[in-house]
Figure (spheres, rainbow, N blue to C red):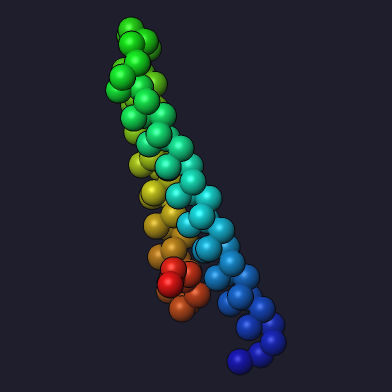
Amino acid sequence: MSEENKALRESLLTVDLLSQDGFTEISTLARLLLSTLKTADLGSESKVIKEALRMIIEKSEERMNDINAEAEKHGCNFVSK
């Protein structure tokens, strides 16, 4: 394997790792807020905020999986140890 290919594979692995970390953090923060809202009384806004947080969680997890699957096609997916 050429040095250029090795560098590209390393970059793809890094991108996958960063996306997993970042999207996991986003999802975790949204879950925390969602959990907090369950006990808060915000009236009609509460439903909208809860739905928005659920969408953030869903999209975050979808994108993390999309990036991981793309990296995996090339054997460059990050696997936590």
